[in-house]
Length: 561
Ligand code: TEU
Image (cartoon, rainbow, N blue to C red; front, side, top):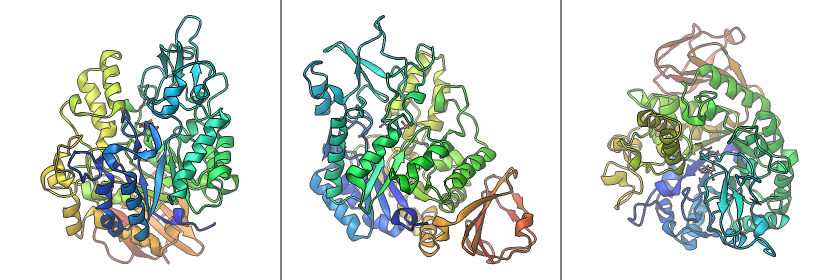
């Protein structure tokens, strides 16, 4: 297997709005990030992924871009961005930028031009315009990701435009070669500035089924079959690769809702030259009740599903493609609240989840604050929520689906994207040290206890555990490359697996429960001796031959001899 920086590195995701505010306006900014580069270096991460910092009216916090080559005013200037890139590079870290090209903002000049007229308009076909059905309803019945029809009617020209996300995020028309060329040109602009790659937003949505057919017969329906992994997607990604990416020492990761391991092999097989890795969503779906209202219909997750999904991805991509490893990001609840415990066992469960992510085959992603064990938030009222997806859901659930406000809030507490978007907790001073002004979204009240200053001073913190994991990855290529094999498939509490690289073998034992759990060596490992690599409780350096009684959320990693 070819060794590359993006397989061996650890990525840290920054959501700039919520990271660090230098200007006192309550909104995180580039100078704020610049002031924290030594923190990132100390943590040990190799690559920083910056969520969008481009000019944007912020209908979806920067995922609605009105100028791809300019910096958002609230975040600073191009000079600030250049200083950030340089600051990362001189510290030996790399920078990957978010590439949001399934859609733009409706305030992008392309769209302003596009909507201005139907005829003789070179920009009309930059977007997806259709007349309504003969009865005047939308061109098809697709739902948007964020609720309601995926089509908006435009008075000016009497047609509808497609928007898979909000109305202010019209989909770009990838069928149009001129549009594709514009996108590649814009990518070159950033690559020439010296960036180290892209995280590609919903990139498997850019090709739609020809004719944009209805999805089934319901009035409105989820149309994923017509835009996830669509007919020309591989062609577009290969063209993008040939046009701008080939021959550069960079990394690419495609965010791909609805991607299967079979598809992911096609996307990430190096010979096919598409992307290096993808973000899959199957793990994120294990606590969604089937047949309900998508992610908002809750169901407790089960360890056997986590094992099954993870094992499928680990096995199917081995030797063929490459995995990205994450349990949270700016769109997901905090992983410790979701897959661990945010009560008394918070620290130890955060370390268990970190051990899991960093001992799988693939590239681990850390989302800002994860390294502190930051938790989900429960704002008392819907008024305090900012996320457009959350607000749309609340409105629909209460007004149209007959949910009570309490039911809607329960789902929001579990799943709202704002769980991940409360500001970084730097210290226990006012506003967690994030801003001297009024923060754009509430600070989690637990900041006096959970913050970077406290974590850095405590050798037993989640933060220092992440440093150790990242340090180990530098010394042991087996962490990135070793082959994964599941053990004890049916154990109800323990998730155990081995990793193997040439003659080296590691054993990972994770107690995913709040109780004690008994690990007995399976037949194939009987008699093996082990040496402790890392653990989240004090433990002897040797591996007991008689089995191990694991404490709540205990994690141990051994090198087998
Ligand atoms: O997310 C795409 C995506 O799949 C999410 O919208 C997901 O369905 C939802 O967040 C689950 O709660 C990307 C970005 O990461 C997200 O922040 C943007 O809102 C979205 O694309 C549109 O650009």
